[in-house]
Amino acid sequence: MISWLKRAAQTRTRVDNAAAMDKERREGLHLAQRNLCAILLAVQLLLWLALYCYDRQRQSSWQSALLALLPLGVLAVLWYYAAKKGPLAGGRAFAGLLLIPCLWLDVFFCMAGCVSLLEYYIPSFPFYGRLLMVTVFPLATAWLSRSRGIAYGLYPLKYFLLIAFALSTVLSGADVSPARLQPLAVLPLPAMGQGLYAAAGAVWPVCLLFLLPGMQGPEGKSRRWIFLLIPVALMLIWALWMCMLRPWQPGDALVPAQKLTAISQYSGNMIMSQLGTLLWTTALPAAILGSVYAACRLLAAALPRCPSAFFPAVVILPAAALLLLPAQTLTRWMDILLPLRWVPALAAGLLLLLMPGKER
Image 1 (cartoon, rainbow, N blue to C red):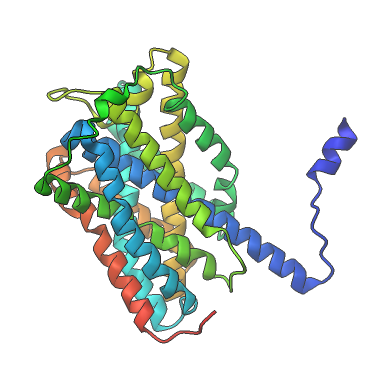
Image 2: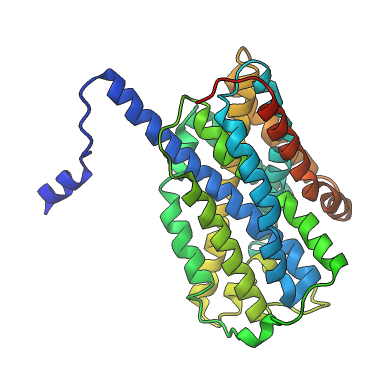
């Protein structure tokens, strides 16, 4: 048995020279980065569904989830061709800095979710302790992991996150009914436009799926479209289960932590309820670290002479400072800013498409 485990742990790739070894390492990094980007996209889509979409559209939320495919498709096609023109270098690297505000907002959004979970499940934990936890741990991880550690570290999580997602939705045993979907109730145009506008801000991480893997060298034949389809499938399943389950009603004053875990809490099974919490307590920190990693790569490409240890603080500390603002002020500003993340993503893609670059 021990010998079998040793053989199973050995690589089956035959590397004959330094060039082949470098190619193998580059392909491994590209795979880890695509996985990281898929986590970022999936988390933002699910956060949008749970914290914004269902509050406003209830059983019609699945229609807004389908509408989200339109802005997502636009960005995917744009960045597919923009990334083919070459890696970020020179002026192209500065164009990539347009994505930094989006990453700031993503980090804040996930940090706010972590704070809400801590407040809900550990009410005796003081606010400053929650703030320090969501600030210090990502900073320390980013500094200790160096340039590639986060991407490689998040890669094994994909299996756990997929299993936890399945146990929190389709395998939760909750009382779902297709009759609650209201398949004949088409959204009116104002509601449809509102849903499309809000969804546009959540789909922007698709840009990173085409941008990050090519920053360390040319890509070979990749499976990036699989890493795009999986977050989309998770979003549609989540929206479908929320609408069939009816997890909360108008007038229910729920904190964000309750909304995030509503599907699993309505399963009637304590184990499934805990797995729903475990999904978010793993996915949100992973998304914070993934956003910090992406921002550090963009900053390093545009500012190669700056110390790399400075970049994680530039990304995390502004987001942590926002958590000090009153909750009502934050809610009002987030309603305005989060949907606008689509604009710099679109602008950066257009700039990179128009700027000269080396075709891959």
